[in-house]
Image (cartoon, rainbow, N blue to C red):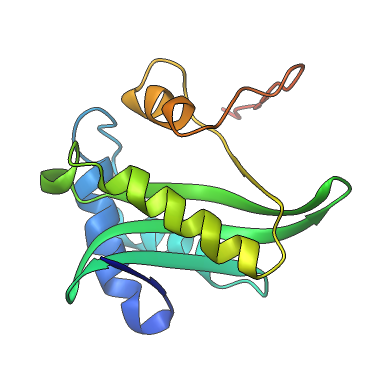
Length: 147
């Protein structure tokens, strides 16, 4: 296993793996609109501060972290927008290995914490808490949907 920085050469591979993971259980998201998915992936990967990392087993992409380096008042953070492991490789400990490798990688570039959001009622919540993430006291996520 090794971690590599991803770039535009990996774009279609990232999209295919993302679509396979998130269009199935437990997420069941509808990413059938390729234009919308392409836009989302470009939003996450195409910024000056984007940091996309891949977990590879030999030459097979088995995990992806899409995030950004953010300079915040509490220090520099790696904000993880999307983190996913290939469906047929989940429950093998790869996610834990990948998070540990990400932590080492971002520490080496001056990051002092990682931040992400997930929902309490999905398996990801238990996974992240098991791997040292904790809820921020007083933190609330808000959204306003338009008709």
